[in-house]
Image 1 (cartoon, rainbow, N blue to C red):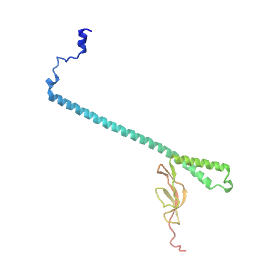
Image 2: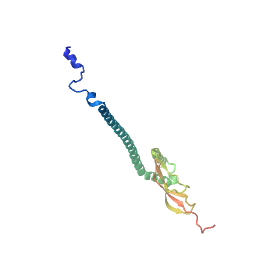
Image 3: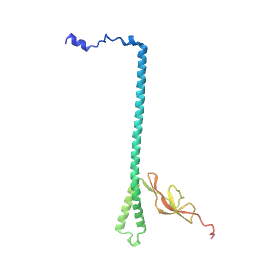
Image 4: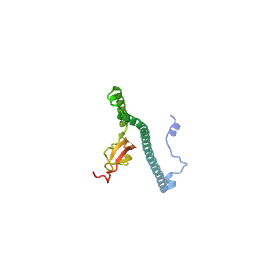
Length: 183
């Protein structure tokens, strides 16, 4: 290596530029430093705010995605409820001579499998017989003589899905006993 090459590798201050502290003074350097610290703090706050906004966006997007899945599943289940109703009506009107035949039992197994699948997805039947009428879960379609405010008959089963009423039970409610009848 020559002397000239070594000289290029070593840092030597530029003698044509005045010294920073000498020309600007310590106060100006401190002022510049404070300005730069302020800018850095502002950038840090903006970064933290942006990070929090992005985190909130991710949470909101996940929640919306979950809600869309539940909504799609509930729409499918709501469309399948008439099939369950038809099975139930068919079994209730089954003639006695067909009861116990293998093919009827096979259809019952299919019906039970469908019910089990729906239950594992979050579908629950609303129990209403003998309970107080509750407009959140029941839809009164008639009133008959009987214990006032009590569900006496269920004409269509109601269901909840993921703790929300999917379809209220259609019920007949007691309106009390007639006043004129004193037997």
